[in-house]
Length: 560
Image (cartoon, rainbow, N blue to C red; front, side):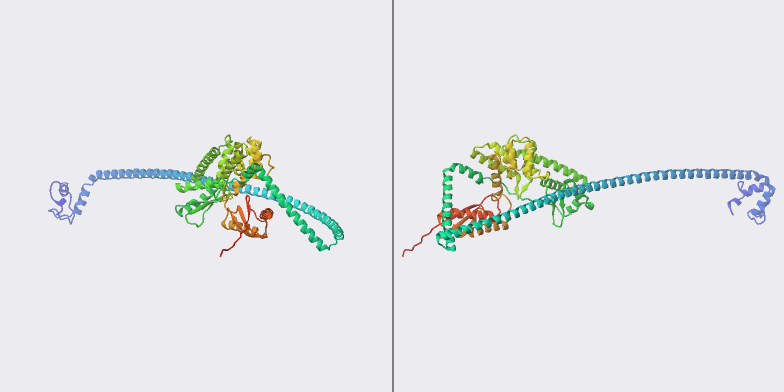
């Protein structure tokens, strides 16, 4: 039995029974045996007016629910509209930021493109300037070649005219000699061959005696003026200064910690190496050689700056275009300081006061300039010392001699920037900075660009030749050195009466052994002059070569 079927005062059946409801058939929960459906039907028929409040409440609840649902739907629509509006605003904001970012990126790419385009334009301008300079140089060389060709044609015409005139004069002379010979034959009653042989022997004997007598006379006069002659010899034979030897190269090798550094030096698409070459003006060679790169250039100062900058970049490790420009500028400033200090120290070492500041800088630059393997700065100092020694021997101004010797090659610090020979460039700058006329003329005349006007100009020529030609001053390959010595001995052995010849003192002297049965003592001077003249014609060498002849008589006997 269900709880609502209990017959108590609170159950539904109890209430219905009090109302006198009729139980429907089939409900078996009451004593009368009526069903629940019959009961509900009877109750509805008997008390339908009791359902009106329930219906009203249901309709009110339904209306309230309908209104609440409408309000909820409206609120949901409003929320959805707000969400859509916020989403649209957020989408507009995102779109705006995306547009700004795209514009910024486009502007940056445009700036990079403009920068690269500007760099390419600058490189093109540099190439155009280089091509223009080369074209100007070719035009000048063409003009010079045309002038030389014209001069050669004029000389050939003059030579042809002279040869023609000489041939006519030779014919006239031959005719005169023939007439004189015919007359001589008639007077002497000799044949032509006999007269010729006799005349030649007589002339040879007379000329040989006269030459030997003249040489002996000159030697005697030289001995009588030994003091003056000794001073002249000092000006050509002082070889007392020697400086370090250096190689004249156009490349500098730089060691790398590893081969990986080569890729960093080159950079992406070669940007780093192009930036370095553009900043220094020096070529960088990266090849398969392990652990080494090479910087190459004909300007020794810029090459030294590039070497210092590359070593700093390798030590630093941060290699990119901006860092390269910074390091190169720092290396340039350091090198300028080194050049300035070197120039000042050189002036102090040589003891030449009052040198202009411009010349001090140029002297410092000569430290990095070499000529045939010889340092130009050390060569200038050596010439200054040699000139001071010779000036003291000759009673000249020592300070002026040292000043001329120190500044005589100053033009070599500028000859790669200014057209012309270094003697003309140095003389022009010396005159511009108020140097004395003796200094200007000596600088100009030390390579015979002008005739020497003072004894100082002659001294600087001699000192320059001594410093450049002394043994060890300049680099010379072993093969070339040996060939020069062999050729020197070979030239000396070609003369009759020479038994053997030996080159000594690094080719500065040749000792010639004479056969005493072939050459007499009185003919030694003439033979020495002939050998020296033949050496001058056949060989090319710096300075001078001493020819020494040795004639020795040996008498051998045996005691038994």
